[in-house]
Length: 313
Image (tube, rainbow, N blue to C red; front, side):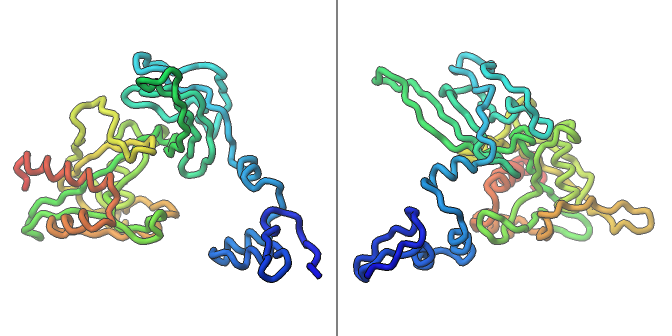
């Protein structure tokens, strides 16, 4: 006799024909090749007719973007249809929408906020005119960015020329927890632009140099070819751009005693940071080792080229 079905859901209606009965949801979940935490979560999850629909309903603030980007690359203005002035911690939804630098290729016909916490994930639909096709083609994309930082951040290369204590040039790197790889990795001091406290991106570089690398002073130089340069793409699916700097001969902070200024306090998520001063040979090994962030690798290459051009290497 077949046992009574405990719960009517797609998850537990898995036919176990080999043993002549229908599995319960708990039995089905127990067989899944997943971790204990996810298994426990699935076992407790309320039943839903459509898990996919449930995920869409629970998605954080899927709000229609009020300002899709220009309909063609010939127009540099943003659309204003369905404008919404509702604030999101002081930022309008128009500001949340990732910018298109330097010009738009496709026509953004829809853009929703799919998730938002430290970063924001945008559900974007773009329309393209494809040669040889009579009607436009629409494609959906996931776009990641940091709207509260205006989608921009700074990376700084702290360079230490030879001196009386060290006859060889060196560079300061930081090593910290990388949530994507769930492991430790290397980077240069890096931080996001905050319009409330930074006048420009050099200010960002100085703050991160102090907070992450415990360094101050020095000669801060931008690696960008011109003042209005938008910065370098972080990746093809990310709206963020970074601006590279090199800081020559920064000094270490004191211990905060006897009137000497101490380094600023780090954020809670930066608990794992350690500071390392490395030689140029060690830097080259780290840059090609696979555990250094791409913006830091690009900034390091540009800084080394600048230093050679200036006769510092």
